[in-house]
Image (spheres, one colour):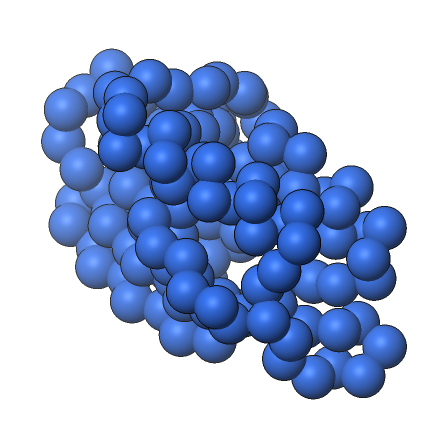
Length: 148
């Protein structure tokens, strides 16, 4: 499953160079990941288990600038899942353009929110995430949309 989130770029997203600031991209990407997690029902599972995912490594490659007034589409997909970590890919397009503005890869782990310790990705959470990855392999072109 590839989840699509759209954002209208506002003045506060931009910097002195009049394009989206790199730190703002991280906030937009994080919001898109949260919307993806809500869409698939992951937030409820994490809350019920008092667990959370945290980013342990990220790679972001900026390709073309995005400016105030532009609308972007963030495509979020879960691409790998191990016993204790996984990877999420996010690609940002300027809306209505084929041009890619940004590509990113985030590695995450699951933690116990009480102790802050890493825990294995198991039970219903693992089953849900594996279904998402399996769905990606069967029909990678499908998207779910939300707007923000």
